[in-house]
Structure formats: structure tokens, C-alpha cells
Image (cartoon, rainbow, N blue to C red; front, side, top):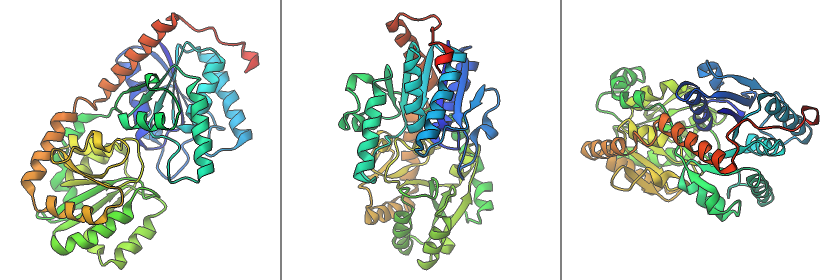
Length: 399
């Protein structure tokens, strides 16, 4: 097949890792011709392609940016059409809000045989202004009509989109976001060296959070819960993996709470280092207020670490109460503190829940499993369209 993937930017992030694994597997495992169309990797998160993009054909479209900008977006749309006319794909698979919207419109206008969009996280949510939320909902509903299937990274994403009247249930399929599970299975081998690097003692119990230091990621809840928890369990330590514009503010908040000795920051780390820092942890905390299905949750469970999570979006699909972790109402600081203490004082529960998570989710989140399911979807859709051959796109001059 000839398959074009479209995404707004290839920063270090879950949707981007998903997309890169898919592109690589299609090339390496299935012998497909793949083209990745993306805007520039702007932002503090880092450039994923610069770190891991070798071997994937990429065209960067300078006008494709995250922020809404009518003239620039029109330029990005025209550029997408030109590249799709040149590449002549059998399948266009889009990701992220802007890339998904413009990519689906461009592919549909060219009558590409199969157009698929992955919902990594809904672009509309309760924390937006009502007018903005409604605009994004309507844009998603319009774009959904321009593709043949919507792929959700969690069942929760399907329910959210249906509730938003984006599309009917039959248009959705869930395919969990894949990752490289082998380094996660070996995370324990990093434990001693990583903890030594952080200045931690063997008896310390480490609660980790993997996320950008950014709004809606919930770090403030973790800090408030930590203030209560360490009074009962003084060996608790907290590891924040990631960086972002709120770092100075969070450091000040930690200092005001008298917790400076209990917190460690890694700063920005490449995806390949995540198993190392999971190895240093005993528990993963996921306290974001919105996120499709945070990769950190299955990553931690595959690494044998139980998870404590707010019950948002797809978290409940992997954090199973009293089997792989603890689910709490969003913003429940008291419950969060209690969970820190309970698991912090219970090494046997941590071991049992971590092992259960590893057994349940290793194969489900293996990236080759994801890519195989996606390719089966492409094939089925091509057969439905009766167009398993090359598309005949519009006249290039019209692009």
C-alpha cells in the first residue's frame, strides 16, 4: 500500500510516538510505501523526528501549525493537497486536531480511496470556554464526514465523541496506542543506578509522574496530597519526569510546602529514557484532568508498577481497582494522599498489582499489535471501497 500519515507536529508526545511506530512498522514489517506529512516541531517538548525519525520519509509543511490562523491554515491545506497529489496514496491516516481537520478535508477533496483519523484525545473538553468548545465540536463533526473510520485509542474516546454528536458508534473502532514494550519489561535493571543518580535511598518509596509541567496535568493535586502523605509515610519521595512552563511555579509551591527534600525533577527526557525512570519508581501517579489514554499508564503497568489515577477518559481501561491500581475522582486530594500511604506501606500489594498489569497489557500495547490491527483496518476499508489499486487524484493544478 501507499499510506500517508498527517500530523500537526512531531514533538515528543504520545500521539507522535504512536504515529512514528505505525510508519516504521508499515515500512519494516509490511513493506508499504509511507509518507509522513507534518508541521514544524515547535514547542519545548523536543523534536521526536530528530531523535528517532531515521528511516521514515518525511515532508515538513511550514504552514501547518497548532494555533488557528486562517491564512496560514489555507496555505497548509493547499500544501497538503499538493503532497497528496504527488504521493497518490491508497490510504490517508490523520492525527491531532489541526492535522486531522485539514488532512481529512484535503484527502476527501482528492477522493483518496480510504481516509482514517485517530482520536488520541478529543479537542473539545469541559475546561474550554463554551464558545471554543462548541466550535471545536462542530469542526470535528464536519471532519468526521470526510473520513471512512475513526480510530479511538480508548473506548472512552469513542463515548466522548458520540456524546458530542461527532459521529455514530458504527464509525468508531478502538485500537490501543502501541509502544516498544521490551525496554519496559526490563525497567527493573535501571533501578539502582537511576535512584543513585537521583540521590535516593534504597528504602525510599518513589511515586512518579510522567507528564509535561503544564496546565491540566494536575501537578498541584499531587503536591497537595504529598504534603499530607509524607507526614504519615516520611520515606515517600516524588519524581516528576518532564519539563514545561510551570516548572518554576511548581518548584516554588513545593518549597512553600516544605517538600523540597521529597521531590526530584528529571527535566525533559527523550522517550527512550522512560524505562530508566520507571525503574526508579515504585508507583505511578496520573493526576491529569484530561488525556485520551496517557501512555504513562500502560508503560508503568508493563514495567510492573501499579498506578494511581484520576478516573478520566481512558484511565479505567487499564487502571483496574484493586487489581492494577487505584482510581479516584478527579481532584480528590484526600483520596490521593491515602493511596500514596497505602501503597507506600504495602510492598506486597505493589508487587501483585504491578505483575497483574504486566500480564494484562504487554501484548495489548505492543506497537506491532497496533500496526497489524491498523493495517487490517486499511485492507478491509479498501476492499469495501472496491479500490485496492492506486487512486486517481484531482488535477494537480487544482491544488
